[in-house]
Image 1 (cartoon, rainbow, N blue to C red):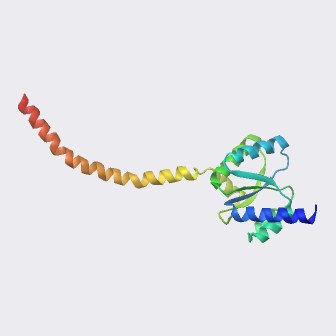
Image 2 (image 1 turned 180 degrees about the horizontal axis):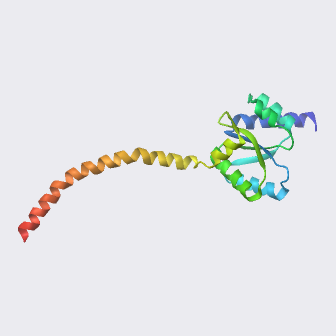
Image 3 (image 1 turned 90 degrees about the horizontal axis):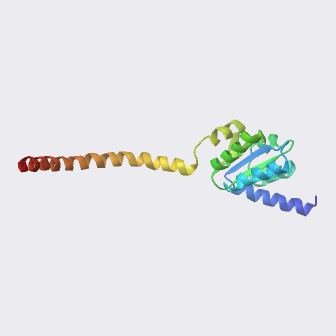
Length: 174
């Protein structure tokens, strides 16, 4: 590979690494081209990408992006592909683990999520969480519930005299 091309790839990887909210290293050994294409399509739907990368270039890019985790460097052995996203990390993990459920590949090595190192087991657990939009909706529901309850109590206090007056009116009409 030419030096200029390597430098360009390293620069591109460094930019990707510094912008991404999720970086996940996987061992793609055993995946066919059509399977990788399907995985890339699934990930593209959730604004994520999957890229096969040379370990030496990725080590240099990690160093340039100031991502300094010993575990990441030790995981850079064998065949390595990088899953990355700037969007919702949980959606990317869900798409990957749905693919793994179906094809039993690739093998997740480790990664970085929101500038924190995560193991393969942690990544699998995170994939079981609801997406960010659902969590926000649940939070809003939890905040809204006491307010709605307070409203129901206050409106009940106002309705009771009205019910009494209606009952008196109905009784006089009979």
